[in-house]
Image (cartoon, rainbow, N blue to C red):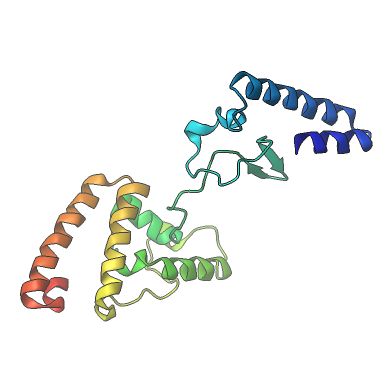
Length: 195
């Protein structure tokens, strides 16, 4: 693949790019011969940082940038890319105000962020900065969620608070609390476990 790109660059008259690609090919070919023909030799420098193994190793792993977007080899998005509206993000950071488990539902977060982006306040000062109450996408009622919704929202809250916001003690307390709730539910039913 590198050789074909180098030949194409030479045909187009871009000698600098062709020289750079041929130099890369020489380095890769040298490493491959030195290690007995191993195909993964060119990938060894990025291997420790690689989170998800590649099914088919790419021939040329050069970090590139197109406009303001960077493509970096060996780096993967994390699972905590979801987010909250600025109002709830601030409440979570400060651990203030009402934080219903229903806001940890991934579908609700997507809808709330979409609603927020379409209905931005006309002033720069947000409702959280003014000390006003929440006026964004409606938060689902905690008392109307099913058992599975409650379980998923609780797990998502524990994961989000523990990993993304680094509240590991709070996440552990939530895990312990969930264990107590499960014992109550086994003995007395679902609604007692919610209370």
